[in-house]
Length: 75
Image (cartoon, rainbow, N blue to C red):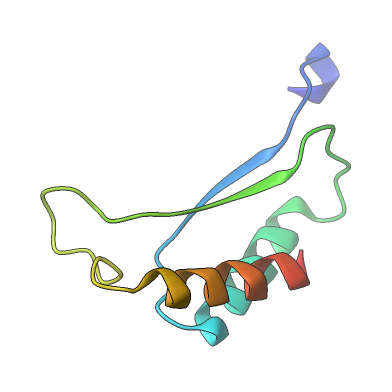
């Protein structure tokens, strides 16, 4: 995309259920980026999985915030 002049960023849909998993997810994102420079940020999205029994569907807002903070700290 970048070689075609498209500005890039990353969207990551998280299903982390604790901060340890959120850190693992962030490290995975960084590994996939392999040092690539982005024009837009890495976006962390954590939400219930509709019509499925998503493993993170019952998390509280406080738990999701903890995961987001852990993810962002690594990114």
